[in-house]
Amino acid sequence: MMAREWDYWTRNKLNILKDYLPAFCQASRSSSEIIYLDLMAGEPENMGKGMDEHFDGSPRLAMQTNPGFTKLVFCERNPKKSSDLRSDLASRFQNDQRWRVVEGDCNTKIDQILSSLAHISWAPTFAFVDQQAAEVTWETLTKVAHFRTNKKNIKTELWVLMSPAMIIKGVSGTNAESFANQVDLLYGDNSWRLVLAARQRNAISPEDFRVEMVNLFRWNLQNTLGYAITARIPMRMTNNIALYDMVFATDHPVGQKIMTELYRSAADREPMMKREAMVRTINSRTERNSQNTLFEVTPDQLAVTKFPNWEPNECWDPSQKVWW
Ligand SMILES: C[S@@+](CC[C@H](N)C(=O)[O-])C[C@H]1O[C@@H](n2cnc3c(N)ncnc32)[C@H](O)[C@@H]1O
Image 1 (tube, rainbow, N blue to C red):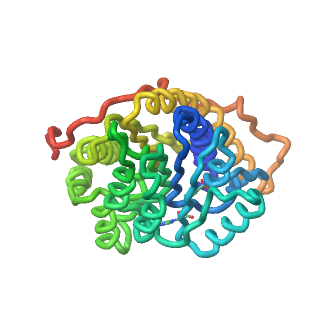
Image 2 (image 1 turned 90 degrees about the horizontal axis):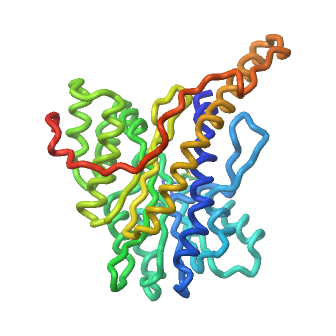
Image 3 (image 1 turned 45 degrees about the vertical axis):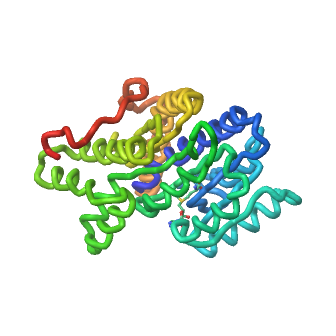
């Protein structure tokens, strides 16, 4: 049920990707090679929960991008999913030599993936890291970021899902310590534990915890990896709690300009998608309870809080906070 209520964000996230990729390729059109890396590629298509609707996953979207990428690598740890993905792409994109699916953990496969592309490491490169909680490591992100070698020192563009909500769930669960070690690997050190400690002694609110965890990640991208620009868009559940953020890192002002527009449009789309999701939940509950379905709720009957228009904001030095 919960999944159904925030599922609209999966579509909204993929809408952003679908609109950004052609813009990235268009901006890179003077280059003879353009690379797309999908470190957690998933399945060929997503099914909207409670909807009779299937929508393309990130690999199909990347393959369909026009103007397009010249090399695409899709990494997926789950053997069944990676094999389904390989079959799906092979049947849809026959005689297309641009792509390959790598089965395995992206953190162990990354060296192999990047060395297979080393001869074109000058190419504009975009990497999508669609994790659920803390599956990617900072070491992998560092390798991906610094993969590109070019005179202007422009790094791989990164688009990473960050979910402080899943992190707090993980560190409160049965395998708390091993999960926390995984989060150390995600951040590259254990400084995020200061944010957690602040939350645990109530020095910061749950919303501040989410904001500060994403801010710390952005701060590290800018100050450790050296990205010029980062941006975040929170993706909220129907009760307005941010479930995860999409964090964007680029060295290129054009990338920032395009993503800013797309984040704004995604935020504008959110209230209607949220309303539709709530309606599906209410109506299916009514149906399950065998109540009179003549009284179906429609999206325009629901009020949804409209958040202020999305604006880019700067990240800040977390160590300056009193709770640090
Ligand atoms: C959220 S799904 C990806 C969805 C996909 N990007 C889409 O748009 O449809 C995350 C996927 O990452 C895979 N995964 C998790 N950890 C991984 C890892 N360390 N390396 C590679 N794949 C991983 C999971 O099996 C899952 O299929």
